[in-house]
Length: 348
Image (cartoon, rainbow, N blue to C red):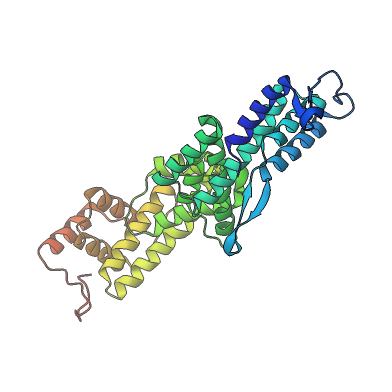
């Protein structure tokens, strides 16, 4: 792994070069000083010269493998003389201090990126992992901005692998897309519009079949739509299409559960119908047995629903105020029997 040591050794070697390198032994030894007049700066492209310097730097960092007892071994970084030659090589290649720093910075970034990939594991940046990476960042001399960008990039890359798997399996959810956006990912670029439309459609269908009777237009056409990067007109068209089908189906289901004397499911189906009506209020639905419509309303009263929804249901079932008052009085007096054990028909 890269460490600040090679950079420091290179700097020390650069200072030593100015004094010269002792070559030979004994009385034959001479001091050889580095020169910068003759270079190959004009013979090779800058990129090629940087690659040559980088390769020799990696050679200096790799060192020799030393065998230890019991069959183990360690890698020993090469001594100062190799870094002295590295500095001389930089001069021959015509590299500036900026060029040399760029190579070291690049290796430090790559080493930190590798460390982040190994440290993250399952992709979660815990407090302990964050503290460890912070120390690694400082040891390698990287800025907070650069380290943050590297960590974010690795995190996003791992997230995208999960997203790809979820897309392939049809499991991508709104929450996952929200997490992607919070992570700074370009959702509209990474996730196709058809997939985002499918996620939006699923959210709308869940609201229209949950049985809760809740439909927040500001959430559907606001936060959900914006998270998925869909146009307002397209979102409204999708909601309208789903509601048109669900509105009629909800009434059919409510009548079916009424005949089965399943109070909870009747109320859920009626709530779904109310939600659909909020999306497509102009779509009228009808039922040819008025007595069943009145029974549906009576069952709804058993569920202690909010007054606003009772009024919404009255309007949907096209019941008069007089009929609603009669039904309410009967239910409140206990005259409306509706359970699985009851063998009698409802009031109407």
